[in-house]
Length: 193
Image (tube, rainbow, N blue to C red; front, top):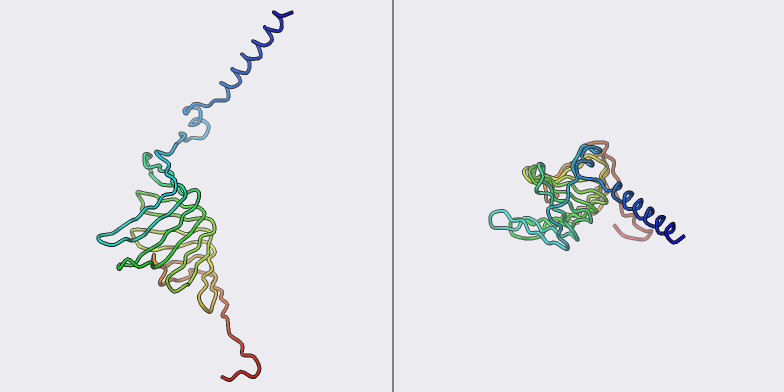
């Protein structure tokens, strides 16, 4: 009877081992099924602060809880999957605009950033853009979106489909389907003009 129990136990262990090994996919199997190799980040950094400068002045400061670096692949990028907080500076080193998003990706060769998920940009005048996707073209020094945007200024809210602005969000235009609301202060009875 002991021999039978021992045989069953050994058979169960062997079956479990085969089952475990059968569930492990090699990189070749992953490539065959998905058409892509499994790509792991070259490195992962936590609680980062990057400062980018041009000539003698700081252009921007990037803060993120985590960045994954995929610079070893053919089309290298950095991924900020836990969100990003960026401050843009003018040529005198003064903060000029601020961007926050739930996710961002920097395409290194193209010098193109993408921000997604509750993207908010605020300029030095307090004007604010809200959208779900925004691109920053470093070479052209512009930010733009092709999806719904809402821009709030001190006295109006403008909405539309897509926009383009200089990278510091000091001047902008909405691409299409523009709608707006202007807030007018009403005077109460008895107030003088």
